[in-house]
Image 1 (cartoon, rainbow, N blue to C red):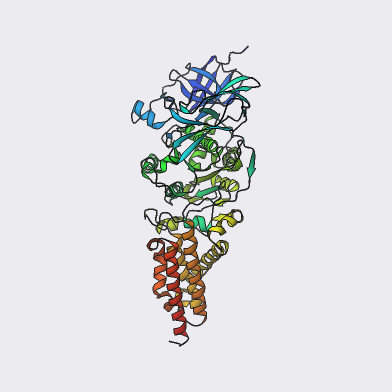
Image 2 (spheres, helix red, strand yellow; image 1 turned 90 degrees about the vertical axis):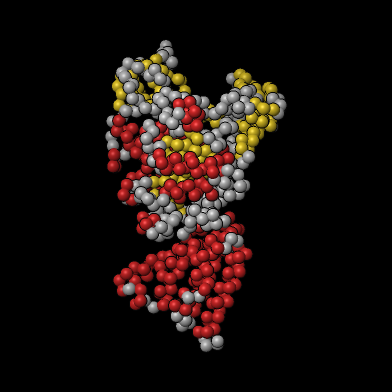
Length: 590
């Protein structure tokens, strides 16, 4: 009989890829400890007595003959109170704790418990002895942060009858909260769960998405909305603002939990995130944003194999909080760096390369990630969702490269970042002609409640922007002065819409976040001006007179100068008076 936990031996080392023999008892994706330091690795290939291991730590100085110890378990993460507000690397090592142990540089082989096992949490029980226990059932509540009430749940693979249950009190993650009689005997229930990251957590059923994920960014919420449980792609070349856009979405989206995965980004960008997030305030509660945020940092100078696993770590945490009936938003920055890690690992594993050297499994790997999003009925009942926003960094801004093209297949929102807009300091630099959202019908009913007539306003604004682009091309050939006022109006209003609505200053306290009510009122105000101006020009009023109206300049400044819908309503009345006065003057009545 094979000894499952016998030690193998390293036979070859190629960067993060290690070959070993004496591994007949290993299983695919089983965690192993490599070398005298016990480096964390995972079995990715087997052939008889030999196995290939990808190591999630630096393999410098690792030599053939070093021991490889099997653990008998897949790569799993700890789930329980204490995740919120923490910062982990790709394999869920807590970076603040590692810094305390080893300083600014993480030493090879350093490890720490992902969650604090000594901390006691105030536990409010909801389970009594004698009750039936089912998968996903909530057995108690823990106040994880002032913004998050953590629901302690029965693991998905446990079912039976509670033999005993503890009273309210302060308990650690490993304390037994209840004993459950199952078909295989009696099993303890604890706050702490462990779940393999490559395995999606089960749900009772999938739901059709119907509610928008409100981000406070006008070009997104009003023109190209994302539904709660939906998936979006943000492609853009270097300097187009992918990271800033994701930061804005992470800060201001109305998800209950935010998980930000920095996979392969530059260290200075991730440092900015780690410094900035603890100082941010939640716009709805006024509490620190970190009280509902988890950060996963796996920068480009960290081991490449850990970058590959980091998105699975993040999505598993998201599914855990979804099972509590919460709406979770996952931001991955960027999936291109993740795909590059797949390419490097595939090259070292000597796999046959596909397009641009990426592995042939790239489409299926992307699908496996994005398909773990969605709205669902958890095993314990209720409703929860996981929304995924993945940034893509195509080399040279080439959207025809494989990662961008395959990502478009599995996402229904495409926020295309534009280099020209970024160079013009127009942010978010989302190109309104190349972007789209397939959730318009799903979120329409909910959006109409906040902004009556939203779909008409949205379609009218997109049509106006398309007309502006058309006449812009014409003006480049013949010059704008050759166009009649009726056509020049489209150019004028396009600029008004861009500057007064689509552009948004992330550093302006008033403009950084725009509530849906204000978005609808502002867009309605602009579209009313557009229609009224068109009628005046058709009646013979020169465009120069319309553009010179004081209300036109006020419309551009309204996004920052006016705080609420009442002030916008006052501006609407002022605009109507000025337009009516101009119309009377054109008819010779004044």
